[in-house]
Length: 286
Ligand SMILES: NC(=O)c1ccc[n+]([C@@H]2O[C@H](COP(=O)([O-])OP(=O)(O)OC[C@H]3O[C@@H](n4cnc5c(N)ncnc54)[C@H](OP(=O)(O)O)[C@@H]3O)[C@@H](O)[C@H]2O)c1
Image (cartoon, rainbow, N blue to C red):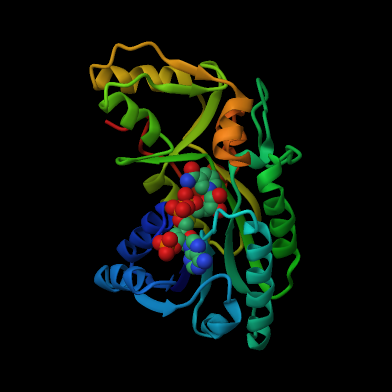
């Protein structure tokens, strides 16, 4: 399969590209800079130069691939509008294809809001944090788009060896500073290692009969206090945690900081049953 990855240089995209290559698929990555293009070429991937802010400049590529994975995001105030223009332009560009193009779009666990003691599944109504509400609308658009054959993957909080979502804890622990907990220590995070997540993307690409929403979590909900304590122990850091309020972190980092404060649990039973996906890793990474 020849797969166009938007965001192949990003945290999730790097792992998805490597997984696809390992399993014999051909990867083409969108690169907006010469640096990103060089990184992708060195990894043996094809490259299309372009920016998701100007999709009409490169959208023709969709007519020479078998599938698209969307894991690119600008993380700017206009990220929802950028994403909407992007997917509308890609849909326009696939006009000539005889069969719908496989499209794996990316949502996220923060679209379910705080679930508390309930474990969110794909039937749970979305209650996104405000700064990611656009993702629910764009996912609905793309699922309804007739020239796409779409699955929307909702990754749990994603970590990797270098950290990912756990990097802040590891950096603070390693620097012998107090680990900051946002909200409170009992907040639960659904978690997945990005290599396990990458396997889920590949399985979904290889199963075009599966459409709709699919949650991907290895662990349904782990308390952040436990994660932070484990990481602190590894670095011999015995300092007490600093607990910061929602208002405090949102004022400093912006609306996305509401995400890590959500007390969430998220099930991945649907993708496990449908594809046999089984995560191999547990947080925090060894
Ligand atoms: N990480 C998580 O824990 C998590 C969990 C759930 C959902 N998600 C969702 O998954 C998606 C990917 O997240 P991530 O953590 O992998 O993000 P990331 O590491 O920040 O990667 C973003 C990617 O988008 C590319 N990009 C940004 N602006 C671009 C532009 N204008 N034109 C072309 N490419 C552009 C970046 O390219 P450059 O290398 O050139 O910057 C990079 O490849 C996001 O939608 C995120 O909300 C993430």
